[in-house]
Structure formats: C-alpha cells, structure tokens
Length: 370
Image (cartoon, rainbow, N blue to C red):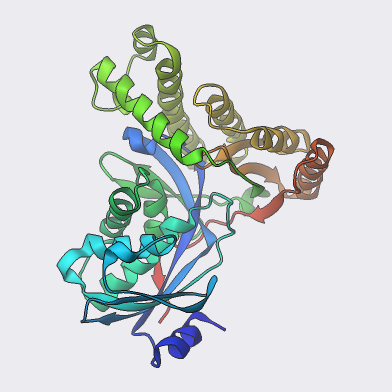
C-alpha cells in the first residue's frame, strides 16, 4: 500500500498535498557544520514521503507505514515520543501558523546507515505544511526550521548540513554550504562521465554512545574556540599558533576541524577543474583525521575504508556522525565488484555482520509529488 492509499484508509479522504524529501550522504566536511565551517553533502535517492491535510482543532494524527497500526493521535505536543517527535517538533516550531494535521509517512531510507532519515522526515513534513498553508518559506528557511525542531524539541544538537542537503539538493550535484553565512551553491558531480561511482558501505553497526559523544565533541570545539578567542573554530587562520595554545582533546578536535575545512575547499577546486579522479586522496585524509584527531570512527568503519582501498577504490572515508553507520568509497566502475568483495571478505574474516552496499547517486532535494 502506498502512502496516499494508507492516508485514505486511515483518514477517509485523500491528502491535500504529498511531499518527498531525501536523506543525504556527505562527500566531505565532517563535524565542521556546527563549527560554522564548510560541508559538501549530496541528496541520495532514498527519502521520506509525507501525505498531509491540515486540521483546525489542534489535533495531530500520525501514521507511518514503517510502524503499522492505528494512527497515533495527540491532543498536545507533549504526548509525542519516538519517531513522532521529529514530526511534532516541526509543527511546534511553526507555532500559531499551524493548528494540527492528519499525516501519513512512508520512508525508504536504509535504517541505521547514517543517511539522515530524521532530516528527511522533518523536511518532508515542513515542506508539506509550508505548501498547504502557503507560508512562503524558502528551502533554506525550511531547513533551518527543521534543524530547530531537532535541536530544541528532539534534543539532538545537530548542525544544519543534513536538513540543508535534504531541502536544497539537486540531481547530479553536491551542495557546497557555508554553515555560517548559509550561502550555498550546487557543484556538478558528474561521476559517470569519469567512469566513477560513490559506493556507500553500510557497516550495519551503530554504537549506542554516539549521541553523547556527539554532544561531547561539540562542547570540546566550543571550549577550544573560547580559549582561542574566536567565534568558532572556522575562524582559526594560524593553525600552528592555535595548537600551541591548546592541549589534549581540544587540540586534536581543532586540528581536525581546521584541516577538514581546507579539504572541502580543495575538493571543490578539483571538481571545478574536472579532476574528479583526484579527489580520493582528500577522502583518505579526511578519514584519518576523523579516526585519529576527532576520534569518531569505529573498527568496522576503519576496516571498510582499508578494505575498499585494498580492493581498488581511489579513496574512502567514514561519513556521518561516526561510531558506526556508513563509509563511502570512490570507485572506478570496473572495480565495483572487487571493492565489494574485498570489504565483504574482510568483514567475514573478522566475524562482523555482513555489510550492505548502496549506490550513492546525487539526487533531487525536497519536491512535491501531488
């Protein structure tokens, strides 16, 4: 049953609008977004579809095809829990501009892969409400509203990258985003023309301490910035001098953020010069920095990266928050099977759960279906 059919069956009428928003994968620029830095994500083919009709009585009714059963009905926003908090958070951020809604949700973002299904859910619902209430919010405003819902309502201190990629993505392009100014531009990412593919390697592992460690890393960066007298680590211009003033974990976090911003700019330069095949070294350097300086990798991610390169990938790195989730590999098309075999064999040798392989195709951002 599709989401529109499910909506009709649950609520007795067709939805007034249907929107789809994608998940994302980040090509490079990890843990830089909440440091006011640079990121380069792109939207993926998988996402969340929201069918919606507004209500005027303040009631929210939610149905998910991934959580079969009767619709969840809430008279107050405090009643939300689990996945419903992402949806209710969006309505809460819109305040008096919306009163309630009947919503049906369908998602096909691979679960646990770190491809930001939460941002896709938030942006899909925000876009549908924006449409049906004629609020006139821009894609970036919808991304900011969705981020605020996750920060203030759900309690996850994420940066703007995931929601921006979902709202502003463009087919065949990566999204360069300055997370301070919110200036963005789409960068052509024509991998096929160069005989290349981005392969997502889903470790199918997500360690439970990821949320707490994420918040800890963010606090360390903010503390380092205060000690250096800058608004954010993005503002460090003399890295050597900055490192001399810091020690321990704050020193390592600063080294990663500053060098990762440089890697984003360097990678964009290579893409603009048509040197797509040369970006692999930057992916490798990013992974080593995330592993050794930011300390957010995991044995499963490290093995995926090492085995992918051994199998013929031109470069690979963990992507996303870390502690599990996915890695990406830049792979010549003729070596795709070799890379997958290399990673699968390495996992089997370690006794790890078999990884999942997904093609990362730069896809369209949030759009209306009907």
